[in-house]
Amino acid sequence: MSPDDRKYTKEHEWVMLDGAAANVAVAGITDFAQDQLGDIVFFELPKVGDTVAHLGKMGEVESVKAVSDLFSPIDGVVTEINEKLLDHPELVNEDPFGEGWLIKATMEDRAQLDGLMTAEEYDAFTAAP
Amino acid sequence: MTSNNLQTALYDTHVSLGGRMVEFGGWDMPVQYPSGILAEVNAVRTATGLFDVSHMGRLYLSGPKATEFLDWVLTASAATLSVGRARYCMICNEQGGVIDDTIFYRLAEDRYLLIPNAGNRPAVVAWFQRWIDEKFSPGCSMEDVTASTGLIAFQGPGTADAIDQLADGPLSGMRPFSWAESSIHGAPVFVGRTGYTGEDGFEILVQGPDVVKVWTALTGSGAVPCGLGARDVLRLEAGLPLHGHEIDEETTPIQAGLDRFVHFDKEYVGSTVLKDQHENGIERKLVGITLPGRSAPRAGYSLLHRGETIGSVTSGSYSPTLDTSIGMGYVLERYVESGTVLDLDIRGRTAQVTVTELPFYTRPRRT
Image 1 (cartoon, rainbow over the protein chains, first blue to last red):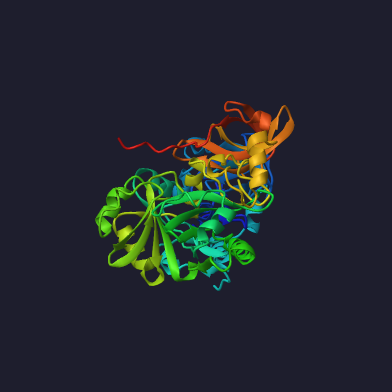
Image 2: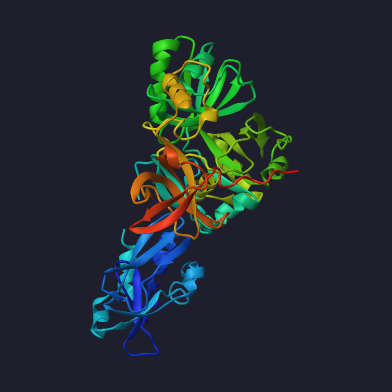
């Protein structure tokens, strides 16, 4: 069960409003994604100030076995990245919905979240054969 | 879910252990178990790990001409191999390209066991049958027992002590590349002191009905089940080639730096080309590369020198044992010297890599 306090994309990213500020969103990858990737060893994340676009490539994640692209769930400007992941990428395996968040970004249009999947929809999406 | 892939006798065991099943060489095999590749690699480097390698082939070659036949199709010498011992070598085509790499065991004066790779077994069987029919029949016959037997690789520094606890009679005194017969929990086993991880270990051939029993006995001793993902990292750290990556039908053992497994004093399929390359040199050679950090070289990435492409990567990974990124690849002969600095194109980003002598990892010897 994915947490129902946030929204999801078909690229297996989650996004939610960051409690601290009304127009800042925090995003990461889902538990399903980290499980599929296996042991994560490296992240390449955008820089603070970079513009990210909904479903545009924002970085890369490397597991022992393979490299995958990371896609932004929203349009926005990056305000913070999770620096802890540079030394401890395994945080995303351990706690993908919490300590293992990837970026925070200012959102231009909060309504964008409405177009994303709910937890229930996302779980159904990942359960489909 | 149905699959047209072959399954080993341990398929249900892997699924119940939570193994993530993937297709490999025509077989459904576990790429990893829930503990993950890093934990599995660590188990093999520090304790004991267990791999189902039943997807690899088991071929018996028998008859008064079996030795002569193997000396015609293998790069190593069968005639000089003592009964009780095993050798690693290549099976080459007429151009010296590698059809497969293999370990073969001399069981008796006129009987051998040979282990081809999973995906190459059909090609090896066809190639062998062609030469048997053309040159060695009657007098040499081949029997493929892959379907009726299983093969388990038990690998790690703790395996020698553990196997003495499990097997009927001590096996820890076996020499590397030797074999012995024993039994584990009543199941007859053929045991080779061989492996593909760079650690001490044993490869255990079991009759089909006993495979699960032997696997369970080994996991019961504390051995950690390991999948193909860990196996790939381990063999890469140990500088061992993987067919389809470092070697293939277009690549010779000499290019791959495997000269020590090639016999130059006999005539066999491909020997003219191999001898010529060994004596006169070649344009491209396999090298090891290392780079700091965890962003790994991957198969297909280009290697450059002053902006010019001079080679490409065949395998790569983050190495948990060495905590650096490692890879193997082919480069033009003038760049093979250890210490040479090259550029690696990581999906458009350039990183500096250093040519490094293989293997990256050598196990500490017992004193």
